[in-house]
Image 1 (cartoon, helix red, strand yellow):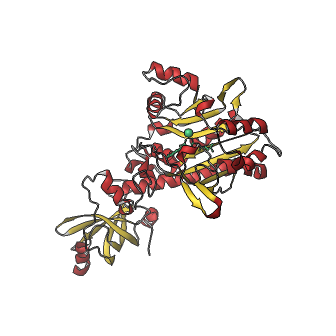
Image 2 (tube, protein in one colour; image 1 turned 45 degrees about the vertical axis):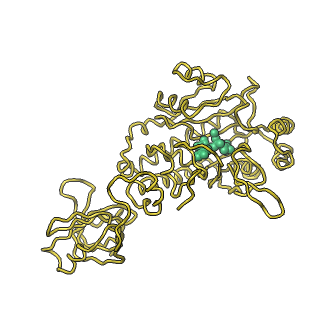
Image 3 (cartoon, helix red, strand yellow; image 1 turned 90 degrees about the vertical axis):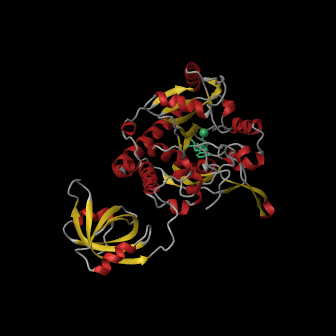
Length: 431
Ligand code: 4AD
Ligand code: MG
């Protein structure tokens, strides 16, 4: 019977077949130790010359790294470790024997080599673990948002206008319609949808022609935008804080083994519970300057600022109420100080920095029209968006997270390029 490795503990003392690939091998004369993986887990198969027919032992001898095979035998518990199982091989079937040496070995390869071989690198145990954590984050997001009454609404990728600023747009020629742009965020569209369904979210690839070569930037990444009618600034932060806490909790419940593969210290993750830390942009600037940053009063936080600030606290930080001039046109001004907006960036601890950007939206037609003009955006392209403030306008808020930033932080990675199956960066488009 073919059994997934993840279910193997229910088969102790019985015979089972593991079908997959040989990850690694150690041999000592009359014994082969085959490390097998099948996508759901990893198990060691022991092939003893004394216990199997000689042709089976020879198949074990012949198997090369990443060859595809099935191994059948009795499942036993590891003599020393709980929750570790072994397969005492009786038979081996080779599905595909690799005759060329597998390009990725145990030795240290540089990042470029690994990225060039991303299609193969994905099989290695760290990359496998990262994808499993990413998957849990996606699932936990759906779960939390459904429970809070949000439904999924898909936003378009081909768009006639910018959402987040015109300097980072990928432009394409769109038949007779002229220029179209790849979406930077589905926000404006799910804002339209809340007037139909109340609360909704999208989740899909977005594109930024950003010339940033940092460990936090990709040109294609996955964003989840959530939006809700009648939600104002304070409640917007509560939703984000509970969502992020739920995600981290789910990963700790589901992916402990993966986090071990990644050598992720889980103590910092256990501290991710509400309430998160809150400070205004003004307070953040003051604190940063006292820590040696040369940030100016009305400037955005730089990557280094986010790093030093978030190393100081062990919980995520909401930095609220940025100066209006460094934020997007759609953000509502703070009634207590018109130079500031009702926004917050959520910064992840341990030096990771921004994972979420969100705000309350401007809901007044005239004010929004003025903002669009002030930002020198083409009014015609935003007419449909302005309509939302003409018919049944209500206070509303939303936010967007970057899946790769979130995954990078939770997995404890140096660079977010490892969190997406096929990263796209300024100088990387293949494989
Ligand atoms: O802060 P951003 O630009 O916000 C928006 O796009 C809003 N429209 C979202 C909303 O309110 N619905 O992007 C949101 C998040 C960032 O906090 C960051 O996590 C991620 O997207 N992000 C990137 N991730 C990887 N590479 C990049 N180049 C990114 N740019 C933003
Ligand atoms: Mg942002």
